Image 1 (cartoon, rainbow over the protein chains, first blue to last red):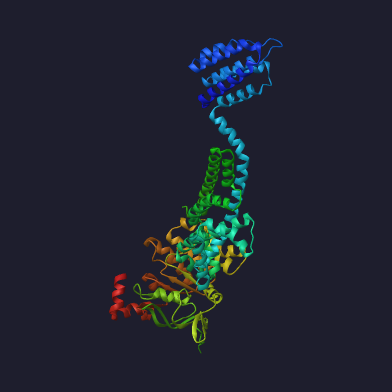
Image 2 (spheres, rainbow over the protein chains, first blue to last red; image 1 turned 90 degrees about the vertical axis):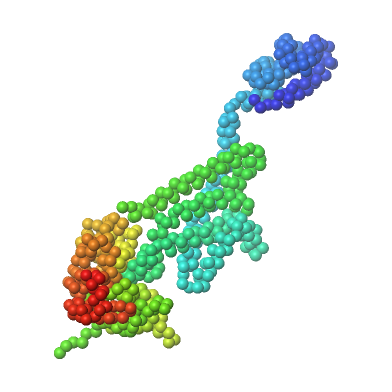
Length: 340
Length: 258
């Protein structure tokens, strides 16, 4: 029970004074006036049981009789019960009122609030999850879209950068070195800002999704390029010689012999990068895209409810876990020829 | 009347330097069609470098290479010598088979895939034809039953026989063997040697760099002893081995091997 006892007490006194003010104008309610005052005194002395006993003496109103004293007494009793952390008794008191006056909104709201308190915590969390899930699912779809676009684009870009870097043509290797240097050496956030907010001043205005895929694609191409280059250069030099010795061109040797052998070696670091990518898509929320992180942030700011953030964390974990398993599977498959 | 036949391979004044080291020092060599040539000599004498220069895995600094009477591998532009176009070099390599000390099989392809790769990718033959060539070559080296396994499951001797089949699948006119048995356990040398012997009996032209005197004795038409980038002595095996008695350097080398 986390309803403040003091708060309920103060509400109880306020209601009592209001009632006394009303009762003062009605000669018929004079008995009750006395009774409420006494019970108020008892409450002030801390004798809640005594106050309850007095309040219970107010009978059901007879036909045509004023209902206010009865309703007030039962609602007051309900507040005292709630303050005593006995919500079941409080609800029972409210229901006495509701039996006679089913439309009494005060009694109804109080019952609803008490019942919400009676529910276990997980129930509240569950209902929050159900409430937040649609918005987060939408965000997740956007996150996945970004991830898949980047996964389509960046290995190709990375391969080109890697081949360019090991090219014997100086201008090409220098250019690829520069691209790698630039996109690895500046924050992704800055690159996204530049592409989305900076390029319009050069007359190029991009949709948020386009800007995001370009930014993520270039950044991840730079990282993957170095990983792919490392993998290519780690393949035994004899493989290239053997390929050349049967008459293959450099391109044929790369395509048929060298690059297929890098797949297994590529999987662990590339898996790492793609897991980082899933989380890096959160940066895209800064350029007006509502992906998972942004969706969670909006829910958090609207409801001030931490469940939204926890749920987002769980979804990120789910996605990265799926990726981990997929990459382990691919790594195994890619290296199957090494198994004896 | 004798017909003057152009040698299959003619090397003139081949020189290859690695920085300050002269690996091959202006050697001349003619290899007739069908000839079996064995090059022996201590480590670092330039045997492998010479062999690799023939199919242009090493770019030589001086000299000319003639294959079937045609100068190959290099062109002169503006008075400076350059490697020929990649296309031309690939064409030459396709006609010269090479077998390496460490096999260099393609580990991600099956045995059949390794042997098919040349005909398929380089000669662009249809898959069925490439497969039938590869099957024949595997039968020739006695490994038909290993067609569908990956190289990782083979013994060293089997790997080297697959490597020979891979080279043969290109129907080369010349085979280069660069220490084909040096990486093998002694008990596996025999099977590779037998395979090479079968090839020799079929009339294949071959140059073998080896430390294995068995090749020289049984197989060679001519043996060359190489040291410090030069040919120190050459001749028929029996001549060379008897001549060796007069040459301290060769005698020392042979005594260490035999």
